[in-house]
Length: 238
Image 1 (cartoon, helix red, strand yellow):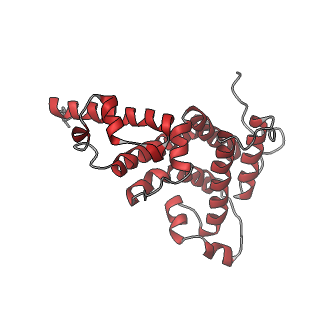
Image 2 (cartoon, one colour; image 1 turned 120 degrees about the vertical axis):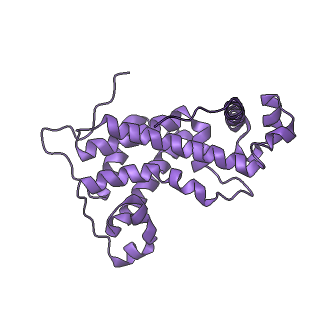
């Protein structure tokens, strides 16, 4: 099948769109999502503000593009960590994914704050952000399912979680509450570190993070490795 070569106009539009997004990412880091301004982005790119509206008709549409981009990026980090741990035990793979998410967040704190920090006043994320938002959960759910994880929280707790959570994560519904708990622990632990809540509290962040990751693996029913295996993957040398 022949590939379709983009026209010069399409290439120019793609380049301008990326320039707008890059300027918006810079604004996120400097002033935060709540203060994101299309006019300021236009000045940074060298466009009149009316021209930016041809690419993103509103601030909310620009925010949505940034949110999807960030969710996709952290999802790709989780998938890459899983793939790099291919052949390892389920528990090692689980911890590797947690580490991949944390590494991405530390490298991109403004984007992490956009998707897991304080809500932006007046903005409501549309449904088209959901597939990207679920990518990390799908990765972790696949690890738990492959490990034949089995927990029984009770019918009332299972009913407390929306039924489509298990469907999206490809899980037995009885695993869904534990999966939501693990998801909360992952992004809560990363957020506490990024936003300073661990200052003078947790002195060895790497060791503590791995401990939380291992505890979360146990909570979803992933068994500890057999004696003689490393319970957690080794960290790369600094």
